[in-house]
Image (cartoon, rainbow, N blue to C red):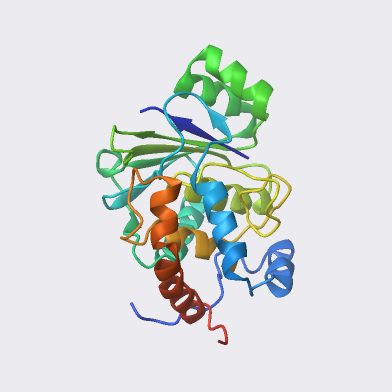
Length: 257
């Protein structure tokens, strides 16, 4: 899995069911760690919200996020995979309080394009999106099974994201890639090997929207965390934001205090 940094209410939500019937995912959900200290959450957030796993251009020392509603269009021939993308987007929408995200049936209305391709067409598709030279760099640096990238403006607001997913590498790989790349296309693009609980770690495979990463995305999309903020800016507001995020994540996952 890989991601590119490119220039420039109230309901109780049951545990993620988008792929709960896949044994590998169901097992991970049963054994998932769900209790974290403030420092564990803050450390992970700062590591994934700043920097970039694969950096093409532009500064990466600022918060990057959508400040506008996010509309997702799935482009591909597999109706079953499109339906699964819709379930995943719905799951993300239910679990990130201040994120307005939904599917759209019109590519012209979308600011996130999910391209569904066969594995044999992955490199060809990456080349079409990013050009032959960058595609070669991506292949040699990341050797991805799936990929996402976004374009941001001078205020570090994300304006458009592209997600490329393979449809024929099995259900677990599809869900694992789809959750990670869709979430990374929203801003947290720096993978880290030092945080063992996040899907934004190349050594970790989830296949669903785990509790730890719900903390990270809810921090990112809280209105007090704004595009363009520095680490110092974020640290100043994080304690208050985290207190509110804890309450929300507990509620939607039916966690005890």
